[in-house]
Image (cartoon, rainbow, N blue to C red):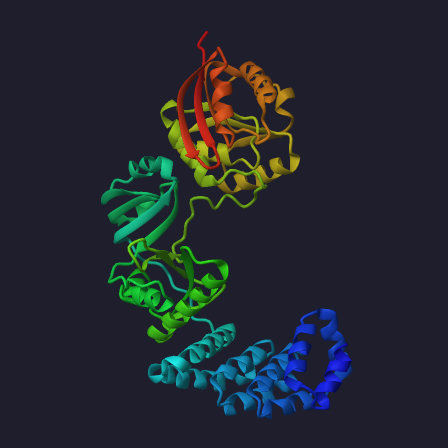
Length: 490
């Protein structure tokens, strides 16, 4: 099939359509290998098509040559790129070269980049989109070999910070903030005059964002999004928060109503426009980025921009090196400790009967002093991962690979804290409570979390020897709930 199509191309038969067909066929690795073997390094006939009068023939010939992954075609591709007058074709030469080792072309590509920046300033709307696509590929290529130095975060206090946290328990995060003016938002809290060193110690927020203030362009377009971000003087803020003053690698995160295809186009175009506006002091990078510019669709029209910095080290949960599918998120475990906090005592003896990778016990120890702490789990691999995670913290937590229902201990525990198995049903709960009573002191506290919150709360209420002290919803949609209960004193 590949051979027949290629021979038709060589005979000049329906070249444009056959090139498109050939390009589709060699997307399959086996077909590409067979085609490369057939050519045996002779790319002259394909290279000749780079001079064809038909722009689409030149475009597809270039893309096919790139797929063949031979540096021998680089001089042909670059020569054609330099001579190309059709703007929509130029991007294809670069995409072809991008698949090869083009380091020898780097000085020429950087020179072209400077020229292209000037062309973009005066380009008409019709041609500008093609120049922007060319600039995006060119930027990506240069970035492959020459990346800006990473920046060092140096900010201490800032005017405005948003902490995204559990929307049902925002007040828990808010009450831990001592510095700055705190106000509540739908998905978190805002702090004006925040102390970032203080915030770094709070374990219940999920993300830290810097809101970017400026004029919002009231249109739903990539141009409006890019202009809205640029109106905020984002570069001045970035430079004030970092020691180094060089270019920043960034990515765009979009939150809105666009479908995946339109979202991808929107993000690419917005990123390209920001590169252009910043004169490449902002460089779009799909990996190894330092900052995220988050663009949120506003109900009032246009977009609200936020900044997330990956240059800020978040060391709160660095212990979490290992996990399993059912592992609770560390931030949720920390939140559960805050929810139950009034009922957790100093130096308690703590048991987690379904400890997984140890997250609940580690967060219990961070919240308030406890000793000893024991984790039990039938899943031996989880126990080993719990030990590995705990080793990072240097906490004295004991882990035992054993079925909780056959676990015995020399003394009784003050607290039982656990993320209940997702598969727990009524029969499981009945057996669980009966076993737990044999391992707990009178008056012991149970902190139970489950994603079947309704059943969890109902089963706790059915226990005659338990008093529910507190309940809290973490996520209504997932029906996840925390129940804090106390075993009868006698």
